[in-house]
Length: 312
Image (cartoon, rainbow, N blue to C red):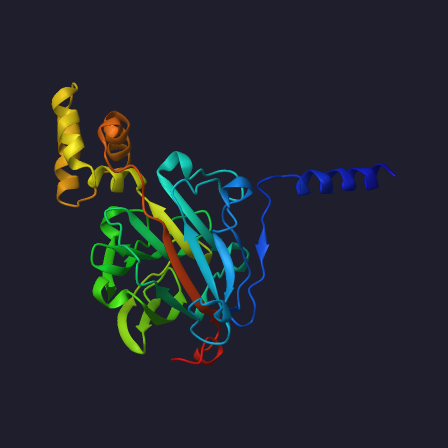
């Protein structure tokens, strides 16, 4: 009897945990091959953040009748599903799905998705928008699909060392607006030189990496909208206010170095950006970050190319 009561108590405790995983079942129309859950929980994940939408309601759809719509508004931040990480405290916002329970340890895999940038979409660089990533269990992201200065870009960081960083543009800003792009990936997860990671965009091979593709044991996929450097954007669009702020307040060489980098759209460092914002935001004319909306369709994973899509 005590054992049964203990199980019931544990079940109630877990069900009441605001950080419990909230799984999402994607319709076959839009996804297959992986199990996803919301990477933020509780009040952090808003209703507008993730939606399955319909073509008949005027939403863009790549194939079939449905697609996935992500939206991030200013202030959309919260904690990871385990409660161990807070976007709000780290200058970030997101609505994202995580495939952490469908992690892969080794071998060759195929992935596909189609991504759509609305015609009024804005590149908010030097804020970094990530629209997908391959992450490691208990480790760093290894491949991230970011919107950087030139547009939709693949960023590789197999380890967490700066020397391992590499980026390559896949879709330019001019190409992106109002169009669907079909992404096909063939990857082999390996810590050795026999690993590889290939990306096709609309059937054209745009990225072909050979070498280690992980540094930890397991890899999993995430996709959605993940904005990093909110203060970086607000600082950048208010450089005149910062100039006035630094003249009128006691300022350091680090403050001026951060401003110098912002004016040249260079990364000033997270802490430097946050500190400058805290110091000078009362001088800012622009106080809002534009909303980011992105659509996905045909999000698939399989052991062969034929399993992941009809476009490639």
